[in-house]
Length: 107
Image (cartoon, rainbow, N blue to C red):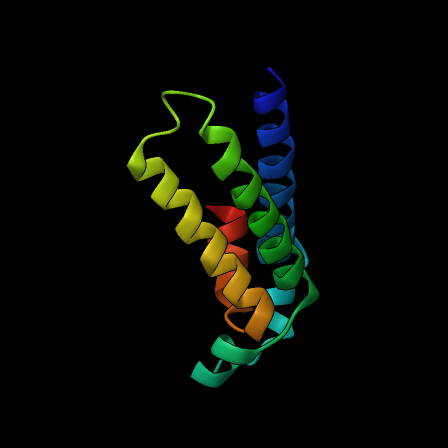
């Protein structure tokens, strides 16, 4: 049950922050230029927070999934490893925050 509550907390935070940023405050549409360069390299705080939350969750979930047989399959472990890598890359190089709001928050 603890695994489900921890997953619920992380996914709810990301979902609500992504929805708020994309649809309500529209920060992603007003603070990032709508050019290809702006969408690749534009910075918003919400994108960084989503990348940090997602990296932490995916890193944690990778190791927890090893203890749950139906989650410890190679495809799920690869999913968690790649999602953590993408989030870490966004944090390390501060890029793709426009897209991170949608893919890490809304989806």
